Image (tube, rainbow, N blue to C red; front, side, top):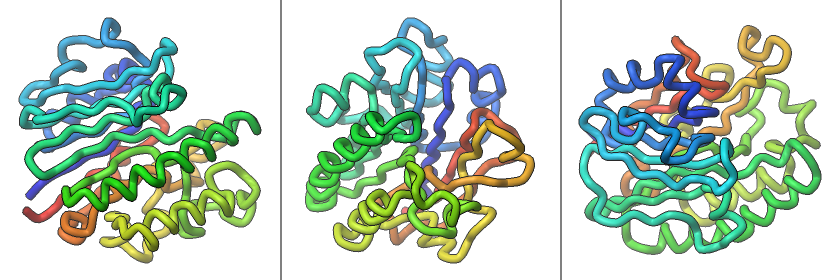
Length: 258
């Protein structure tokens, strides 16, 4: 069995203080994809850089305390690819890929557009340029798992208040149609939905810090593991860990049959 975890930490130092690494030590994960490090290399402890039994790879944002992604791997990477080759995207530390044999693991943090119209325009621009990259990945002949915070809820079942959010970033028609392109047209597998096609309230991975969203489970499913069909169709089990809160997101674990 191959175990892959995706976790938006909303600050790696904050998550560490909340027990993330104690939890991680018991997970026996083969790969762990992190998003929103909000730190640079000099801010990370030895445990954060390389937890016991794991190698650590990172793509930091240029802006301090902002964005950034990482991957932990049980085995050393054959190849490490930082960024997508677009300076504006890469300066924000949003894409990291490691290759091990014929398997690629990607940690992805798509922008949020909720703060302003300008940031929504940035989000659409990133989506437009990321789509052909996804086409190249699925056409490469490699098995690929893209883990991360996509900042898009694809279907009404993926968020509590879908009717009231149809004009809000994260559930705009253009964003949802883009996810449909990724899945239905390009052929990527949404592994959680492959395993749980009808899940609703239990599928959420993010809850706003405003109001009583967590207490009332007013959540969104915006963290995904999207895979090429060869490995995606071998997804065997999924877990969204909610017993402890390391950030405003919950870790998503998928086990794949080897």
